Length: 366
Image 1 (cartoon, rainbow, N blue to C red):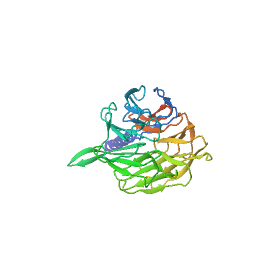
Image 2 (cartoon, rainbow, N blue to C red):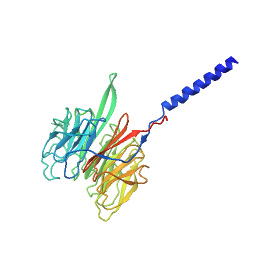
Image 3 (cartoon, rainbow, N blue to C red):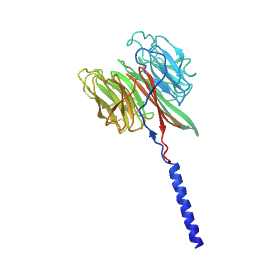
Image 4 (cartoon, rainbow, N blue to C red):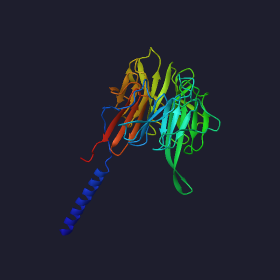
């Protein structure tokens, strides 16, 4: 009898331990809402193009006047840390709190831009910039920077391995700057034979990546490479006139979204495109019917929840792009940044304003 009671007690204890372990290991889920905060920033006429964060506190944004601002408190306040008149800061990509890259759109497109250097590197958090040494080759300008962090074992030691791509540009000509050794050396990939503009770039590993672009005839285009940019395949190429594939967002390595920016005044049907196979194929999804809702940036926090910036304000989906509702995002949000942290996820949007959406984890153990 005592033996049976002991066994029963042990079984109850084991079940309790298993139940406790399950509750402890419950996956974290985000409590989604749509309440955006407009951050206090220096007034700027027009849209700002990019914002970059490396953690919950440290972030940067730039302007077309060559001004670079930094925050050390998650956007509560910003400090002007560098100013380079004649440079148009189109893209930013920071590796950590010290090291980052500043992409300049280049000359002969926007009035007043005199700087011909496409890419700068900073090693002091953006205070000073050094032109990236491209070995005599160059591209006209940069519209997007993609930084891929991974680890590589070399001689028995695990070392950080960073692959960087900077691509452009709006209006052409096109090209990609590429580094596979954490920015120590660079190569230039000419792209004029493949695309008339390049607006965004995304690499999944050192060899496989995508560019989001348009043809020289101004038709939307997405290209994919599996050999580090030596060759490219068209994976999405509609024939509608006056379209650009502007920005992309990949919440997973397989699922991604991109905006289709239309300049056709007769086209009121605004669509985005979605992939579920890492960019090998794309499906068009309707977003809204509004000639004023010309699209810019896009950002997804997970497979289902995402935002799109347009000239008519923001749009939000909670079902992977099947349906959209309007969101209180300022006009022309050109870039979204998704920043996970211990408490949840911070989402930043930059355009005519700089905005923030703080999403916290739900307590799944209650």
